[in-house]
Length: 318
Image 1 (tube, helix red, strand yellow):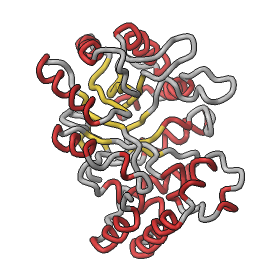
Image 2 (cartoon, one colour; image 1 turned 120 degrees about the vertical axis):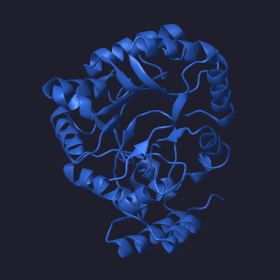
Image 3 (tube, one colour; image 1 turned 135 degrees about the vertical axis):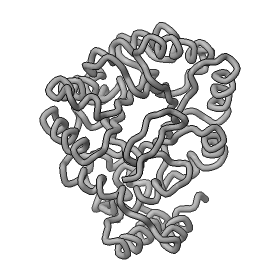
Image 4 (spheres, one colour; image 1 turned 30 degrees about the vertical axis):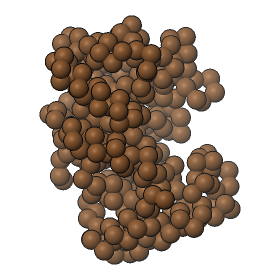
């Protein structure tokens, strides 16, 4: 299996990352542990989470996903060396605050380390930009935490191109850690959110890209082809907007490619991302071993030029 490198760092892993947003939400602790075991046993290693996962669930306060990963590591200490853990801070945490100030980052890192039951975080990401805090303060804080051994590398999420470029300049000029990765919202239905200035900045600076919502809230799985298919789906609001001529055209292109490769639409959509020059690894979630098996198999699919061209044409931004 081809290994991917994250930015210019030495973090190498298989070309799919597991999205931990489901841990403690649509996958309870027992199921989450089984999924993590299967993911690592299949030769994959990159697990992405955040301190705010899953504060949107009634009764939750954030940190639930990290705590489940931590309880898994406590049961399987030997697997710590086989897994790369990525988490984030910056979104609002109840009774804690938000942003990328020195105080908030330092407190967030210590809290995440405790929940994750680990002594270091492989990739710590700024969950969203904080215009109220000078970027030099944020990056110098990360520098101190890297020196302290609490963090290995840092990344950004939900940054616009000018701010990402500014961060790269400050890191270079001040000798501070640089953002080795960007986590943007990007998939076949939302190409315009990343392609252009943001993608060009990542390519220019050698920044690894690990997009979220890789399957467009499940739409690209092909399960939702009419509003009747959506029904009471938990992410119904996220897929209804794609049920239109363009969305159905994308599914048709995925179906055609799937027939050629013996795959399914979700696997083809992930393979398309993996064959993009700018993409390091798409982030995908699973709540069952069957879904996880689909994700694992997607890393072995190679799309031919004709299929890529058809998918590109159907999904082209307006």
